[in-house]
Amino acid sequence: MYSVAVQDHFMIAHSFRGEVFGPAQGLHGATYDVELEFRRDELDPDGLVVDIGLATDVLRSILGELNYKNLDELPMFSGMNTTTEFLAREVFDRVSAAIDDGSLGRHAGGLASLRVRLTESPRAWAAYEGRVGSS
Image 1 (cartoon, one colour):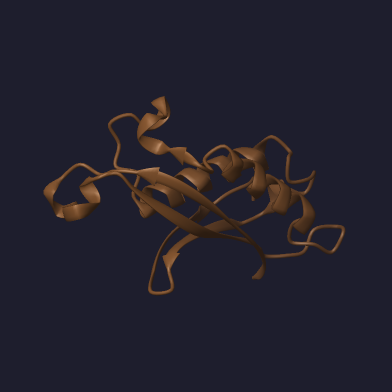
Image 2 (image 1 turned 30 degrees about the horizontal axis):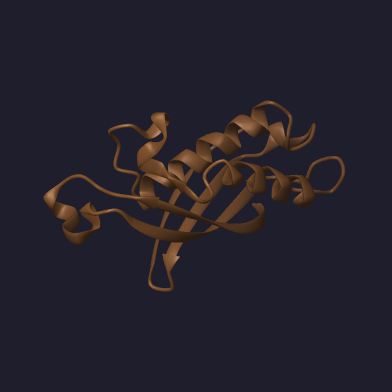
């Protein structure tokens, strides 16, 4: 299995509901490092897993929609605990949509899987991984 990864980061504010979150129930900020790892069984006709430039642009665009936002104020997240795990899946879904709409190039439909990892500190991270594309 071949893989290519790109990284970026974003900063948000949010709060959580539920006693399990302790002091994080209050409004607080987080800075996430984000890594996308694209995987495929065979290289595409151009010898690539995915175009790194396009992958970087797509990631930057997706994170730009969330960067410097208070997620509690965004209607799409109303009533949700926007945990690190939740946000990893959110980024995964948005990147998957970009694969499907051709934003990652004409051969990106041949990708086998995608892993999205959000790191919130050197000691804590969450990821979401799943199959993508038409393979």
